[in-house]
Image (cartoon, rainbow over all chains, first blue to last red; front, top):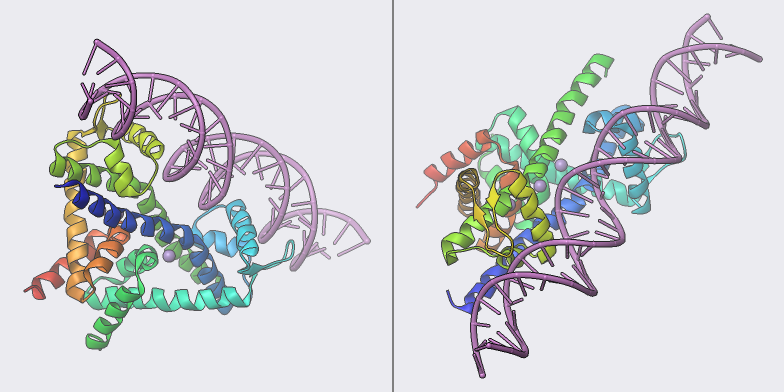
Length: 145
Length: 145
DNA sequence: ATGAAAGTTTAGCCTCTGCTAAATTTGAAT
DNA sequence: ATTCAAATTTAGCAGAGGCTAAACTTTCAT
Ligand SMILES: [Mn+2]
Ligand SMILES: [Mn+2]
Ligand SMILES: [Mn+2]
Ligand SMILES: [Mn+2]
């Protein structure tokens, strides 16, 4: 392969890896706000303990992350009080929920079992571009009972 | 929701998040090994610079990671020399390539454009369970020209 | 054969995301 | 009102995965 083509290939490939790293840097915030929104809708308020239990991490980990989310303008909280989302947080949660739902329902429609669809969609959702999400939506429209 | 059901829900959900975290901890090794195999097949030998250029990271980052991969028994190298894979490394690369190919071809068959399929598959591949991979394979068998 | 370019390594720094153990605050039952 | 359990926070630690700058080795052209 000549030198020019080699460079082009490297550029194309590195773009994909960069996108994946970028997806990962946004992933945790998305999962936290979506989870907090779910807990608030289910139980009225969200406590740190609920979040830790559902994520499968330690309380202290949640405390530290909530601080970061507060700095990002997604979460509000007073010391020793339950957590709430900002307007921006609710927006992000709603976007995340819609995307997550499409990915999970798509896997189900593809013939995957419920547990697997639930588990796989939790990771896949963060790497699905708008274009792919639309393709999944079309598939659902064609193949939904 | 009664207390028992609440605990059950937390267990189910935390299992999904744990799986995603576990997927991420294996992801980088898989990408490195697959990439090194590709470069060796294309160019005869793989140098650190090639890897860094295609991943879009600094040389020093690659050096450090190669040390870890060597400790994991996936890579062999002598100082200032090109990189090679161990038998285990080649096996992992082959498994990864097959999976990656199925995911990328699946996205194409779903109607996604080439560039998007290339980019999205780079992240999605690591979160696809065997069951989902099989479902994608069935879809390809049904919908391939 | 030697000097410059290309590639590799080291050193030192950073952030993110996890953990445990100990301290603190809140809330509820007695 | 007191006490005690649950929840929260703080403090301190660790490893993964990035970076730049400087030092070192190899390769290649003259
Ligand atoms: Mn997720
Ligand atoms: Mn791959
Ligand atoms: Mn990948
Ligand atoms: Mn991922």
